[in-house]
Image (cartoon, rainbow, N blue to C red):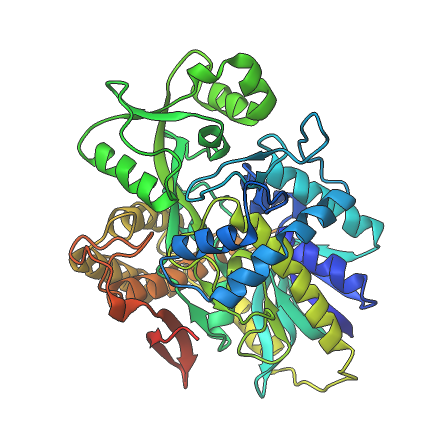
Length: 533
C-alpha cells in the first residue's frame, strides 16, 4: 500500500512528492500527462518573496496580498505563505533553479502588478519552466515513482476517509484501483474550460476538482476566474506580466497609454476589455526597452511574438487581448492543506487555500505551489505514519468500470466536439470578464441542454488503447459540471469584486465579504456563503 499518493505532476505535486519522500514515505505520483507538460510552465514572470528588507518587508507583502484578495482571504494563511517565501526561494535555489542574479550575486527581482515593492524573483521569463524541470529532476534523483497517462475517475472515500483513487489507464483502457494511506490532489485549476479564450493547455479541464466535488469534497469561491490582461491576439499565447514589469506600456491604436500597467490584474484586464468592446485595439509597446534588454530579460516573449504573430517587439507594437488564465477557487483547504475529507489533502491551483480571494497577484501562484506543496507533502507523510492498514470494498472500481463500459455503448448520435466548440464560445461571452443575471441564466440554459444529451454523444473510437476520444469526452463531462458550479455561484454573488464583474451589480458589498461554498449533500448540490474564519 502506498503511503502518499500524489495526483498531479505540476509544481505543487512534485514539491509535495519530494518532501513526502524525504520524510521517509513511499510516494507515487499519478498524472494525466507528462510532468513537464504541466500548467506551471505558464507562470513565466516570477515568484514573490521578500529577500532584502532594506526597501521591503514581509508585512508589506502580506498587506499587498490581502488587499489584492478584496478581503476574501484569511490573514493567518497569507502571513504563513509570506513568511515562508524566503525559505521557498532558498530551497528552489539549493536544488538548482537558475534564478537571475545581479552583479553582487543577489537574486534579481522585478516589480509585478498590485504590489508596492520590487519582490519578484525570476529566471528571465522562463521561471515556471525552470522550476518544473528542476523539480522533475529532483524527483528522479529521489527515485520517486510515476504513473503517467492515468486519468482520475473517482476518489475512494468511505466513512469520510479517503483511501486512494480509481483511474483510467489511458495506455491500456483498463480501470484501475490504487489504494493509499493519504492522498494529495494537485491537479491544477479550471481556467482551461474557456477553451477558445484561455492561456491554459487543452488538457487543463478541472478534472481533479470535478471528481472531488462528485466525491463529497467541499469547493469554495468557484466564481472567481482571473483573466490575464495580455495574450497575443487570435492565439491566446500568454505574454507574461514580466513584459510590463520590465517597463512595457499598454497603448490604444492612437498610441496613448490608458491604464497603470502595474495595477492589479483585474483592473488592467477590465480597462483593456472595455476598450476592445468599444471597437478599439490595444497593444503592448516594448520598443523603448531596446533589443539588448529584451533579449536578456524577456527573450521568451520576443520569440513568442515573432513565431506566432510575426512581430519583432523591439520594432513593432504587439496586439493583445485578455484571456482566462488562473482560477482562484477550488477545493477548500485549511492552513494545513487538509480538506473536509480525512486523509485527503490539496495544494496548488486546484485548492482554495484562502490566499488569493477575488484576485491573485502575479508572482504569488508559484509561491503558493512551492510553499503549500511542501506543507501538503510533509503533513500527508506524517499522517501516513499513523495508519497501519485499512480495508475497502470493490464498489468504486465496479461503478467506474461500468461507467466506462456505458460510454463505449453510447450511440454517438451527436458530435460532442462540435458542441464543445460552441460551448467554449458561449462560456466566454456569457460567463466571461463581464456578466449579468440574464447572460448567466442564458448560459445555464445552454449548459443544462448539453448535460441532458450527454448520453447521446458518446465516442466514435471504440478501441481500448490510447483512446484520446474517450479521454476528451471524460474531460468534456468534467468541463460541463465545473461550468455549472461556476455559473450558479456567479449568479448567487450579486456584486462585483475583483475578477467577478457583474454589470447589473457594479458595487462590492459588505454582505458578500464571505466565501462561497459548493458540495454535494445527499446527492443534492448545496451552494451558499459562509463567514471567513
